[in-house]
Length: 104
Image (cartoon, rainbow, N blue to C red):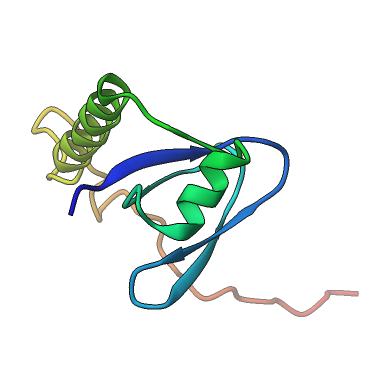
């Protein structure tokens, strides 16, 4: 079965009945993937509450998601060798505080 991407338009949320009996409320501007034969999607298309995304837009979304995943892989690694970490010798010591009696 062919699936397409849709974007919610308008001002209010849209409830879509997904496969498996799950109903999800999508906010305006949110993009979701569903079959164009889904009754909720057909009704929303008829009332212009959603729009079907172009294949060009879908490609752009997938490329952006891939770039984000690639950036997450790069930043998840250890710090570069040029970055110095604080040594334990320089860390402040937790010496006990001594309170002296007043001399009056």
